[in-house]
Amino acid sequence: MVKPYTKAWANCYPSVCSIRFFNGNNIEIITLTGFKAGSYIFTNDLVNKLQKVEFVEIKFVREDGFTTSAFERLSMHDLTERIITTYDEEITGFAVISIADLTFDSVPPLILSKNRHLDIGNPVAAIGFQYDSPNLTIKSGIVSTFVYRDHKRYIQFDGSMIWGNSGSPLIDLNKGEVLGILGYQLDRKYKSYEKMLEISKNNIKMLEQALGKFDVSGVDPIQVLIAWEKQIKQLSGEVYKASFNGTGIAIDAKIMRSLLRSSGIEISGNH
Picture (tube, rainbow, N blue to C red):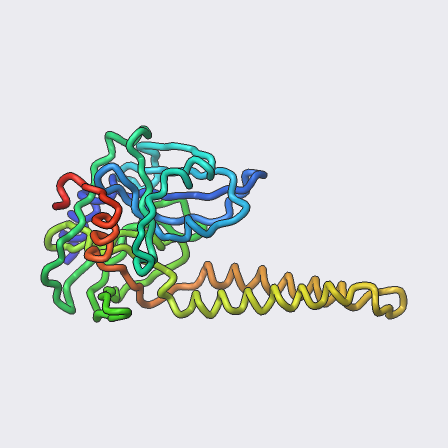
């Protein structure tokens, strides 16, 4: 089974990129994975929701998974202007970025599978970047089941996922085509983490309203509680980012094609 994954890596690694987001102090905020199809990059729709981001770096790599083969640094404003929107509000979980006039012409595109028939147990690979690592990686697995939500099919992939893998292409080993894109809005653990962040945010806001109202031997205990709450929030984020999932959920290529059609996008070699 090793050889098919070697082939999948050789065929697909040139088309997968890291998308790193930086604030005004050039501190990295988050990393996503993306991949080229036609003159577009597909990635997670978190790109539409990030705040306090000033710059974005898009990097493709060579066969060693590290050496740069193509690179662009953009302002977040420029990236936002390139994001393709759809009038279908039910299509969520991924984003499409136009790269027509960037220096990525030499990057080969991947093909979005028409995915007419896919069996549970079908061997697949996920290729992407991950938390706290500059290297592109490949992960093996199988299609473990299908999940249906709002009359749409999602593909459950039985393989380890970690922060940063969002936006990775799920590759059919038999055809080398993209079966779907790994999304993390569908990850229950992320939703729990998101809920925890909201609780911490509300706790801090409540505590800040009480600042200056108490004094214990010259110390405001509210300041101590706020500091603890912020430390817990930061630690929880680090634990979440470094933790693995045993499975991943991929948005079916059929849904991706629906966005293309609703937006009037045509991708050569994908129809």
